Length: 458
Image (cartoon, rainbow, N blue to C red; front, top):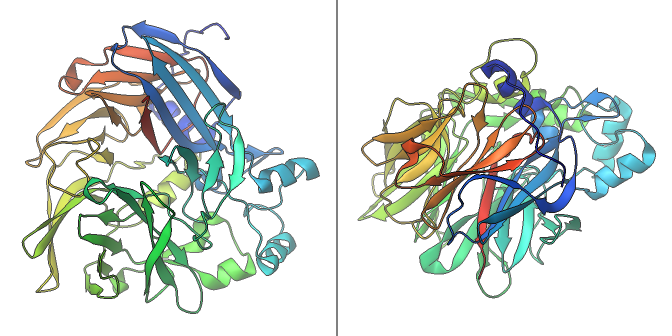
């Protein structure tokens, strides 16, 4: 273990930039971590986090943070102590690039190389968005590729897998429905007609495809949500620029176009009758993440973080440029009610407070929940919100940022970031505003982690 160092204070704008631009400074397996405060004795398990860990390669920066090579950070907690590990995912593409001594796959490579990659159907699976545990196996996910299996003993990369059924893509946002003892997910199959492929990952037994839905265009579809009866999609009018993609023109930000004249399409798929798809179009809006959904009579209620447009994507891509950006600050919690018979949706803002990365108590997914946990104030605070919009939150120091909180045995585990260090803030979920009861320190910078999970020790 390297001795813990005192973090160097920075201002709020600098830490926001560092999160999205500064690569993981060192990789390591599980090593003992410093504890500040006292860890709850009943807390036993592993917190897994995932996000882009490498933004620069061979001296050249990627064209957008979403192109970054993924990295997992894990904290293993037991008996009042903790071990931590951080590793960049050594995908087949990254291994090939390191052997060649040059970039081969990102959109900053030469135009002939991009055309060749498209012709050969080759790409790099960055696995940089989420990390899940399914049937005691650990998988890193990115929405544009199949899952990447990770060894939980040291976070080393095992490799890409299609689980016997997955096509070219598997979303980074599977959602579990406890009553069905399964996770559900989707993948996009781009072609002359783009298809939405639907998957089920049961607690026991093999993964299976349960259906597919044709789409009117090639969208960017980041997340969806599941109830006990339906899979629900809000297909915002963000379209991939197919000619640019095929010709390899421009960087990652130029691949997508916001076309509000198409509106946002609402798609509801009955899980047990996936061919009986209900769909209609409403006014244009965008969302990165859903919180939850549940059925009520002939309605589906959906909680989600709503944005007026796609500007946050470009704001994230411009981090470090010197321009003042609000990044994720425009997101607001909304509650939508979908009338299945009338094929209409009304959406009401629940709170005026900026928020993102919503999570639930495990087991609440797919049914009405009392509390949703999330970040607030463009990653400056962590807390909870009830259905009326009441917020209980803890604001971090100005030189810190927090990412998605994960519920574990009455506590919230939130990875918090500083310039030269990071820590897992352990909060009593019933008294979040009081601040963390313990901090588990990593002695190095950890880049932005989008999502994660807690795997309790059995």
